[in-house]
Image (cartoon, rainbow, N blue to C red; front, side):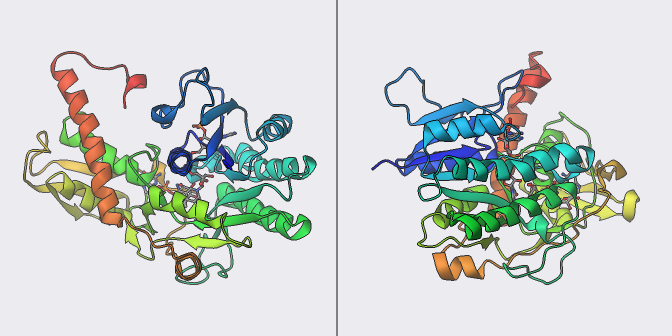
Length: 373
Ligand code: NDP
Ligand code: GDR
């Protein structure tokens, strides 16, 4: 029997990888997409199927996590075996700017989906995955963080996700729904949104290497994170819903690095050696050596990274390090891609785009900003 999945956030980083993964397993995949004034399906365009074809395996439905009747109607129509709730206002810094909206989407959105499952009498049929986050640990109470580590959220985003974590546990206990939280630590890829720190670095440095930008402006580069690859993490999202009983799992690599280290590796991938000097807001990174043919537009002595306090957060999560022992022991999950390999893949992808833009610019054919890759 073909299984049916419904993914909120299918147009995002994780949603696109998960949709690919589930299609590969023979699922019929339905996804929620938001109406936007311009196309917002770039991450799934390569797997999109013309709805005029007979029996398309991927279907997108207009909707929003703030709209209960819309979610209920879609679930009624789709009758999914599995729901993956990946949709969210997922940017921590932005959640300080839009706290109420973030609470509505990231907190109440989860409740709306769980209520729809209950309202439609799908408690025994539909399994539910909630995209929980290492941001729940915030001001960390224990190192490394595992399933039993107490939470201390430090942003409107994390507080909204705390509600979602507990409402998922509550609906599991109260109504017997197969509902799980994946407490995922940061995970990245060439499809990562351009304003998250890793992608901002790989894209920014690739552009600098090709002469499209001069300098990268960063916030707190002392911040420590446990970064994995999104492809490894979506595999685990699916695995969590295939067990006999629902449980919550931490998904992480168990390795921790600083933002400064990520900048250093990314630059090195481009043949650029950096020297960091100064402290606090005056810290800079200067090019000390250039090798190879990737960074054609930088030379020793160039300052290519500065601190801009605008990127500091009102409350910071300084350090996160996950302990994925439970996922390994119970599900046999181990990440296959290292943080350094992921960084190299991201730099290569961004360099490819930067080279294309540099070439176009050379021939006076600059793309409008909105159409840039
Ligand atoms: P992205 O920001 O790449 O994707 C978010 C998705 O949610 C997009 O498809 C976006 O649509 C959609 N969305 C935003 N607002 C709404 C709304 N109001 N209604 C419906 N859909 C909406 O996030 P990721 O793929 O990186 O993350 C997936 C999930 O996992 C998120 O819930 C995130 O909070 C969580 N998470 C992520 C981690 C990470 O490191 N990546 C770690 C731990 C948890 P659109 O494309 O139109 O903007
Ligand atoms: P995070 O990811 O907040 O951990 O949330 P992000 O990449 O935004 O920040 C990581 C760390 O880098 C520091 N930082 C900067 N961050 C950004 N975005 N831009 C900068 O210029 C910059 N300079 C330094 C941040 O202060 C922070 O400490 C991500 C999201 O995907 C969430 O949805 C998810 O839940 C968590 O990961 C786990």
